[in-house]
Length: 447
Image (tube, rainbow, N blue to C red; front, side, top):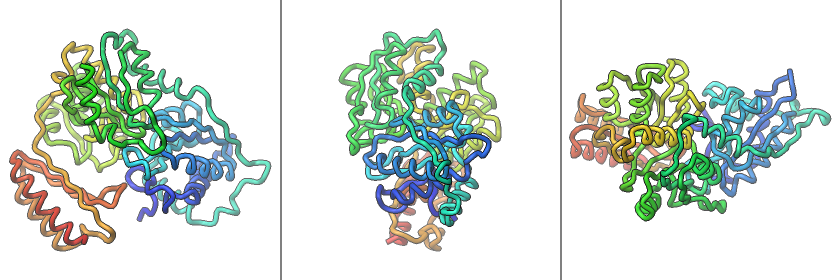
């Protein structure tokens, strides 16, 4: 059983267990001991988003890492994919991102990257948990072996150059008017700067973080303000990132939202035509729309599905030779460029397709008609609602009603005390009925 780690690192309410300074200190000590390399002076890089609690957790982790002899490089506010990239670039033994991604400011989290820039496996996370609850005092560094900490200058510029290289060198964004919503998060400086350097006229929103307003009525989980701004300035495209900028949602010139499934379809078709797909298909999760699967099948491409979580997508991509994957929520993993979801690089790939086709975003990004899909969440206080026999019966009944032409996915959230109930199929009325019936039963069992 995993006590601390969920689907994307450790996450929770700031200053309550497990997101306390004490736990962050011990997590850093445990992870530092696991990744300490006796052959050289070991180092770790730490980035964060713009949450108020980031200061507390960052300082606690610096204390933990230096106490076991690791040197710490502090990057400041920077996107999650930038931390993954700089972990490799700086030859670090470990990378850390302090962020709760798309969650409200009161939450925070800790994500780890190995020296190869990839997120840690379940097995390594379990080893860290085991160490975390052991007596670490005998393994602390001797006084002369304590680590040092320093801030790295120019980290933002390094990432901007890295992201820009994802576009063909001869391609410019001259003449494009782009609205970018940085969710008052980690990309509030780098995303507008990168787009401007590529020649675009950039209108930025969500770029005034104050520690409290990350993801608040902005970013990839709340696109209304972006849609309004696109209309207001008559932009060609709107780009919405989340708090740590590892996911992206697009808004077309009419203000309509384009989700991750459509974006994966755009990239898959473009790369397939150019002979750039390393395997005849892409990887997505169980939550991706059936319409995407049918679209790909019509082009001779497969859709491999994984558990929810971009690291599971990445693991499948690595083990089966895919170079395109992602999630409906906007995580796009393009392994030719990055080891994890990268909202800015994904947006640049979409912009490249728009440039190449010379058509409006609304036409370029409308690859398929989604199958009616309904997702509802049920909050619970404790226990295991999905183990209830009445709930199991209701789920079986819903699956039978949908039959072969639909899908039903029931799962607990990996980051919040929620049960997610999703169904899809060609009959919208039936899909709604199935979801409502299951939600009612789960809610009663969780009361």
